[in-house]
Length: 156
Ligand code: 4NP
Image (cartoon, rainbow, N blue to C red; front, side, top):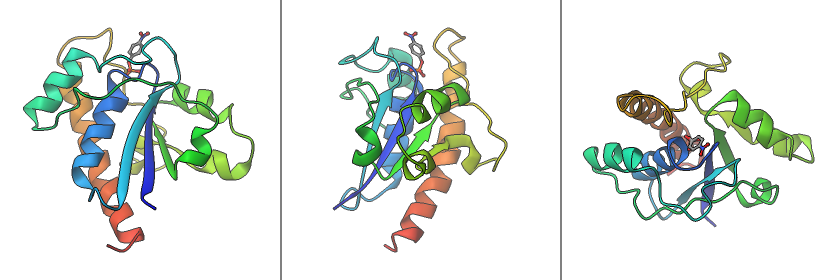
């Protein structure tokens, strides 16, 4: 059984599709699967935002085939690790948890870089185009740490 990781943001078109593509590019495919979801329902079935597709493509990652879906309570059991992009995603997700074990699966992704600081990945959706560059860099650094930890933990 592969280890399953879920990346979560609000819309599932800007940040979490990037996080999915970046982390998947750093992990061996046989052992790990990476997916993403939004807490909101607006973009179910949609392709990622064109600005996320473009910044990923500049970094040789293709996220254009991803399709948006909404986070549901069944994802707590479907995934082993759940990374959220910001504090608002965190509260939206843990509201759906039934027990402590499910709550503990949920981590703020930038706590991998800045432990316990609870820093948000800013939502670039309404911002300037260069917001996507800085989001990409943050996610790339966080995913380096996550990939290293997961590979060590699952001893590959
Ligand atoms: P994301 O950004 O959470 O990084 O995908 C957003 C995209 C769309 C919306 C909100 C946030 N929206 O309201 O449609």
